[in-house]
Image (cartoon, rainbow, N blue to C red; front, side):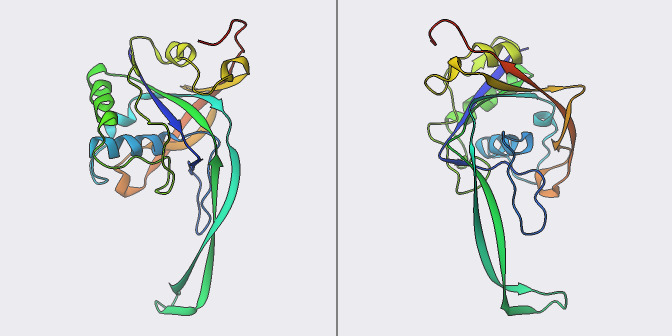
Amino acid sequence: MPTLLLRLQGPMQSWGTTSRFDERDTQMEPSKSGVLGLICAALGRDRSEPVDDLAALEMGVRVDREGVVLRDYQTATGIINAAGKVDMNRTVVSPRYYLSDAAFLVGFEGDRSLLAQIHRALKTPHWALVLGRKGCLPSPPVYLPDGLRDSDLLAALCDYPELVKGACQQVRRLLLEATEGTVRLDQPIAPFADRRFGPRFVLTEQLEPEEMPCP
């Protein structure tokens, strides 16, 4: 089946899947729920609309440059307490985690007509595209002119040129959806407005360095 490739690269990214209460985490790679949210923004699909067709796509990630985890925080006052009243004397500190300077090649394998629709939308997105959070803007663009490939997911991820100079001369990680492996709780099972996510399995492999110069 064909594969659509996206470039997720920017100064800051954040792909949280296990955030609880005031702490906002990030995974070391893009989450499926996060990237599908980006695709919904490109398509102009509202958070209340179904995402079954997008969730059925098989996802893979090639890590061309590992991100450095950074910790920031935000503060908020005027929090509503357990009694339902606004407490102006209390300040809540919310830790936030980000990936700095990471570069990912993300692929989705599935129905060609759907992938072609997404590809067009990424070129002229309906809403602004962000890398996990509103303040995390992509640079360069997510859209790849040659991103719609006729090869399967693994071949497309392995064969596409490096996103970062010298990346192909290093060992790179590949993460692929599978029937077994590490469990990730980032599979959308309802519209994003419902915030309901199920498990999926991910296998991690290594892409060995190339002996010849990178293309």
